[in-house]
Length: 261
Image 1: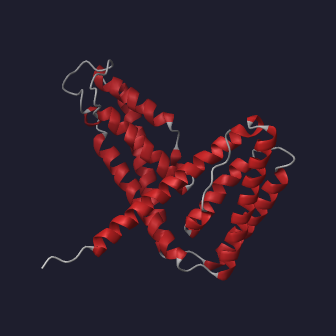
Image 2 (image 1 turned 180 degrees about the vertical axis):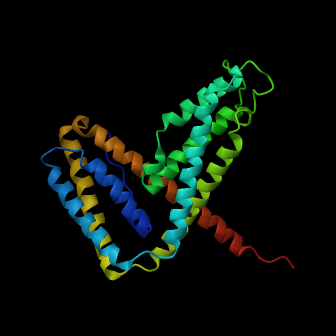
Image 3 (image 1 turned 30 degrees about the vertical axis):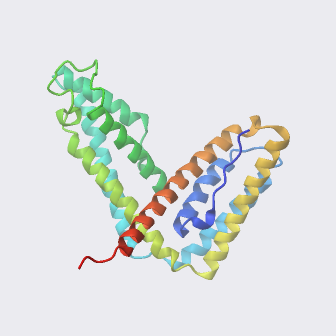
């Protein structure tokens, strides 16, 4: 039986917790069960208060860097997409065929530039992985390409390799800046924002508890879509937490390493 997965919200940094609730509220609003909507409304109200108490603190200095990094990433994504679509008209049929496949991969993900920060990062990361896999696949064979010379360097053949490399680099830089800013903000949480966060977290947990209880009684059919969408967001957040835990463990291991005399 499918239920909403657990997530320890206390493990999230301040900005992560805020972003998590921002995305979750989009999904919880889709549940129209009369027994659930009051819980969503209470959750939305608690989040609105959380949002309000964060505003007086203003923006920290890293916000400007973060916005600049996001802007650079968006511009390179745009250039990557334009280059791929333009190359579909190339006179070389092999290059045109490659460009068509690459364009289809890009289009599959939609335009991520207007998505929330965390979600955009994940979409671009998956996009880059797919493009790199197509660039030089383990199997090698691709029926749309006749030329042996470009079989294993497809992105270079259509002038896209450096674009994709730059997109990957900027995406990694952005998420590192995002993580660094979260770490700083986590040490400067005011009493009001802490209380606002706790209320939002509590309202979220109440929504989860209610839906899971109704599934126990009535079955999952009426809630399956909402639950699956919520679980996808939870899985993504768990991935970020796991990655941070690994980085911290590696850093501690490095810091604990004795000096070589």
